[in-house]
Length: 69
Picture 1 (cartoon, rainbow, N blue to C red):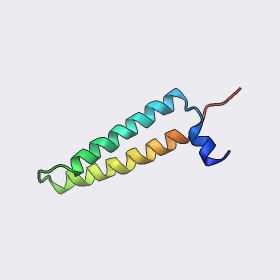
Picture 2 (picture 1 turned 135 degrees about the vertical axis):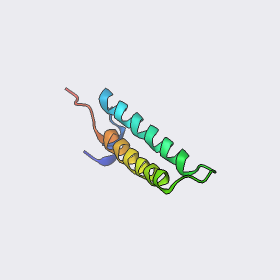
Picture 3 (picture 1 turned 120 degrees about the vertical axis):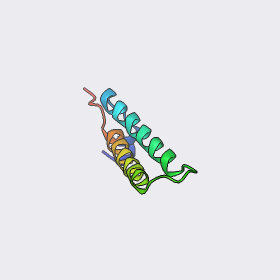
């Protein structure tokens, strides 16, 4: 299956939930990193890990396809 067809195929419900949680992690991490106040280094570092983890989770969950039986 080609990448384009895989990403355009329907995604199972569980993986849609995982994708949405991943997108929420990315949004939360981005908001923390872009915050105008000075935050401790540990919090900013954690936020960047949230961005990476959420991006990977969303990409992997989106690439799963439902079986067509």
